[in-house]
Image 1 (cartoon, protein in one colour):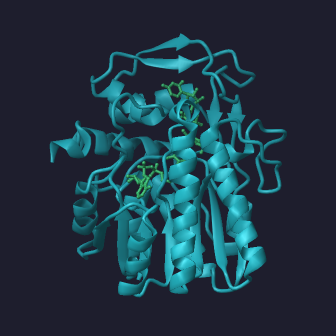
Image 2 (tube, rainbow, N blue to C red; image 1 turned 45 degrees about the horizontal axis):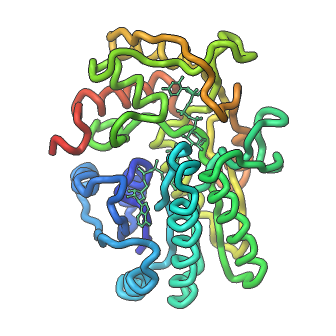
Length: 336
Ligand code: NAD
Ligand code: UFG
């Protein structure tokens, strides 16, 4: 049995599908602060298999300990966390409490229950301003906001944990920019309020929920002046978790990028989305967003070398799948 913390969320629901499809048993623990339990009903519909759901907070060590023991959990994929960069600057203590303290309690419950295999959701945001590209795992880390620092501190905490007890098997996954949705259109990203991230915003403009996109700057030193990111299809990202899990057979701690290795500009995304949706995406150019970097993309070769994992889905497919999810669920899970 695999425990997925944060499994009702955007990435977690896709990881749940990947694990169930691979024949693994799954229990999800989520406090539903940024998700809807309907996502898990959809996951089960997609897979034709059931999973167990426990509504709990990862900071509740006793609840986690009880789940680990009751269900005979053998490994944990830990996705639960708060992730809004802007909110993390406004409420840093909330972020440290939820993400860092939450992970400490989870690890403590795992230690007591004798479960020592852990896959952790980190982020490319730990790299901060790129000193060179593509970003490999040896690139210096210097996160520029409290959210990124929670990820970095957790990474370091997990390395210290392994240094103190070399029975642990830990995979730290640094995601680049997850986008898209499951091809069924049944699960996808369901942001509350105004989306912070590019793809959900573009999709809401295309469907007419928002008037226009604000492109944050077109004066970067890039081909068309807009920012460049390594967008990765969430289903490819999810399969990276299964690869990690399958290869964490020996004790150790390994830190791996999950990206495509290819950067796409904001304007490229807009054009691709217009092409697959057949809808216009009007935009205006605004000032640069504070804290944004011009260009960010991964060197994803370590994941391939270690685990035989690489992404396969194109930007067109990312936009097409995102669009299918948006059309089928104009109000996300709230319409269900
Ligand atoms: P999400 O908000 O959709 O999912 C996170 C889930 O964790 C939610 O269902 C939320 O309710 C749950 N959660 C939060 N705090 C919890 C707690 N204390 N106890 C129990 N459940 C809790 O976000 P996502 O995009 O699916 O991200 C998943 C993970 O990946 C996060 O850790 C995030 O920081 C990381 N990540 C995301 C991105 C991205 O762009 N989406 C990029 C890099 C890393
Ligand atoms: N952008 C716009 N307009 C918008 C939203 C975004 O022009 O309304 C631009 C941004 O300026 C940037 C690009 O689109 O150039 C991508 O922005 P996102 O907000 O989608 O993604 P970021 O790269 O800024 O950050 C995301 C997550 C972080 C995570 C990081 C790396 O929000 O939490 O990817 O994984 F750490």
